[in-house]
Image (cartoon, rainbow, N blue to C red):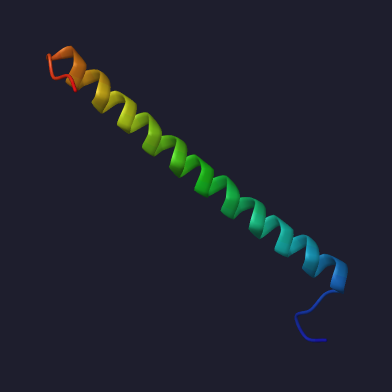
Amino acid sequence: MIGGGDDASRRRQWGKRLAWLVLIWSASVAALALVALLIKLVMRAVGMTT
């Protein structure tokens, strides 16, 4: 097979890609949570409360 590999290596590649996707997604969610927390802290510091 041209440019291929066996079935097991394809599954490993797929697993690596999925792991990277999950890692990048979770890092972006964590970064968004951190930014939201920082904005909340700044708003409290200047006297804006809910």
